[in-house]
Image (cartoon, rainbow, N blue to C red):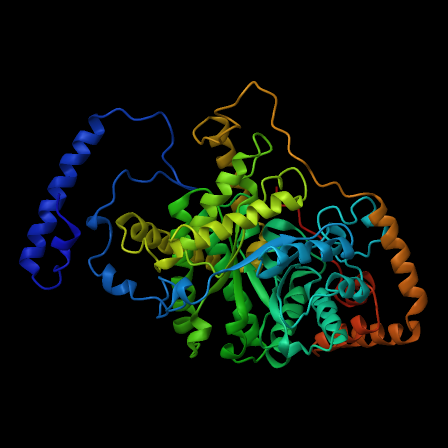
Length: 567
């Protein structure tokens, strides 16, 4: 068969190149004849959306691919945003952690840092995600169960007790009340003597994907977008090392989207945030360098690598050409990745260790800047310390024993990978056109367009599993009659909730309630005007106003979000 080397001179000798391509076409045609005559397994040879070809050759990629690919650290960043790749700096190993009280999670943070983790990632319980205090009636039975309970600055101070906040990078997965939790974090750092300009980290703060997929919201869409731009504006001036949003495909994919939908819907959300920042009067190069992304790393190995490469290329092109960003830092897509929680199985849970290892490899080959590897028990409960340690060691083995980080984009130039990268890019652009036709992201959410697309994809994937067209090891194939392997699980005691009630009662007794009420009234006035709300929320945090008190003050002006019925 014709070799890659034979085709390198395509642009130098048109006649010879045409002959080589014709020879290759003939060879591929003969292979296809023999392939069609062979026996195939009765299985769907698909990625997340469609069947893939059995063979890819130079015929599947444009002749100029090697030129367009470029090199790492150069536009359009297909091969990575840093010229040194992981030879200069490894990805940040950032394990998601949070359970019970702030003191419980503080101890877990210190355990992770002691075992080589290089960044913190905070999981909040469901009441916190929704903006409720631990003693709110709607919080009953949920306090500390799916993450850490944070109801005031006092909890945030405990969470980072003994952890120098100017020396650690912290990610916080919070969206509806993100601006409030960020204010708690900043105020806690001030108590340590650390100014906002010294803080490094990320708040997720991506409300559009909440309306699409995860459903942890507080306010209607327009005021929620205003709060996000308030973060952009304030952060650019006062916290220049902080990422004020992590535009997240993760939850879109976990809800059932395809890889191409995750790619397109997430980037469309990102473009919407850029447009809102520009509409505020912000210089795109003032805030765009602090926009970051968050991707789900699913089971289809090559598709996930291609998705990350396509994402960088699309973002850089749109930022430079469509939004006229001048700084290369605005063109670069920086992102965190997490292995796919939805792929973990309760059956044969040790298999999850293997799934996570392959997914982590895909994230690294795709050039992630930071990575969370899921623990084997996360489909059953919050992870134990033993399970978390195995997940962290998975990353450390990948970083230090495999040799994978030694070469930048080592699969670059693969016919299959380059074809798949191009295909995902083309499909994303096609979806952008569909989004434009429905009136943009906000209008698409209001009409339920995104929600229906995700639901349709999820239903198709579930049908494929039920029909055995998609094999899940230990679930629909390779099922054993032996008793299921049991593993230790983390249990959250009911005493966490009662302790939080007592803590909040003490805070309300001991704080300056007059100063608290004045801060809340000033916040209501700012929300009713066009002022940036961040300074007022920060002052509320400093006065030990609680999470729900601040949410309620904003809600009295903005109203609450009620999801329309689409199905």
